[in-house]
Length: 341
Ligand code: SAH
Figure 1 (cartoon, rainbow, N blue to C red):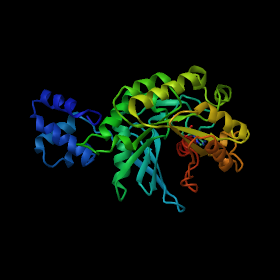
Figure 2 (tube, rainbow, N blue to C red):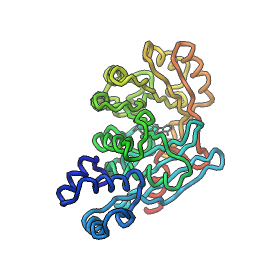
Figure 3 (cartoon, helix red, strand yellow):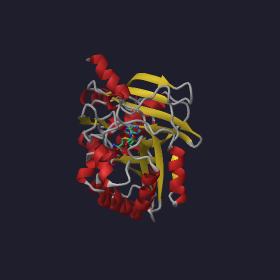
Figure 4 (cartoon, protein in one colour):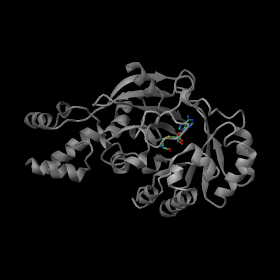
């Protein structure tokens, strides 16, 4: 029920012999007031509340662990799903507001060499309701509104395309949490056909492409997906995304010692992106214990950024948030899996 659009909910209530406005009331409780039980929906007749509770579950995630950084207030959440699986979400406070990084899958099947989320493979997709609940549950513990979401937690959002699109539409519904679509970022490892699909959704979210290499040869050693979709195809899908939405694409580039962080790589990257209205986000690598051969760049961030800018490419170095609590994406869940044996 929580994954349904309002018109779908109206149909559901019509089938139950209920008036249309009841669907609107339930939608308001689920997505604006963000309650977790039918019993809390106090403007519904008691009999209806009981009938709904008997026939429908409201899937809800529960906060299993919450770590708060002493350095910058970043909050990292381990969230348990109804079936016992767990995902992570991270709440960051910026001068423009609060931003939540949400997970789209339990695990991931993309196999990127530097990423902790993929170490145990893909378990399953999250439903739209579960992704919404990542936002709603964290919101319930937070002063101030969560008004940005980045889908950059565990999982590959475009590998769970339909649920992610549904999540974005519901999260931005004016009768629900009402988040601006422009405040939502989808980060992808580069599933080119799905990028083109997203361009056709009339949903102007920010697209972030995890690039991480200035050419296909290096990219294929880091990201298996690069063997399926080569850079010309991925970059032309990003160009099509920009053309359709007017949204500047952001290219994520994680600097890895000796692999992709030399001046020569910066020059090659600048040539690759020349003429695009884009932005490069340089990400300091989070060391992953199981991937010890891939190390953080040794102080090359600033030089790499300067080189790109001299060649006309906008770049920023992403600030490391929650250094004392975070670890790389997926590590909190992995340590829980280890504890459970
Ligand atoms: N699957 C999506 C979104 C999840 S990962 C994607 O690939 O974009 C979010 C971002 O974190 C991606 O850019 C990813 O490449 C990056 N990332 C993964 N592991 C990392 C690590 N150990 N250090 C720094 N960035 C990492």
